[in-house]
Length: 167
Image (cartoon, rainbow, N blue to C red):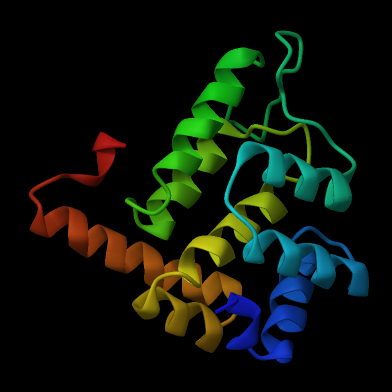
């Protein structure tokens, strides 16, 4: 059964509008369609690149000169490494918690722009496939859901005896 059949229309609109507002962007009905299409499809580098191109008109940092800086954070230099590491992150998405995937994605910062919206699209894709996380993401605004997911992830790590700095 497609995910969009059990998620109310209001979720898609609210999620997209909050995601765009975080970036300082206004609501855009086309963005709702882009998010729905991305979340409904398979999680792949190609699908994510298509989503980011639709949302931010940006490409993956696949060339060595494609470097970015985000505040004090300096992600790995651009190049094929970025593409391969993004593939690794997406391949592990159903094994890792949405919060861990979110953090690893943002550390990599694989696109020149649009990384926040892409990270939140992956968060929606991954969360809506997990019954426990799906309720949190459908119940709370994005930032609050991510906060609670982070707490759940921290609890999981502590139970496994892994300290959070091991990421």
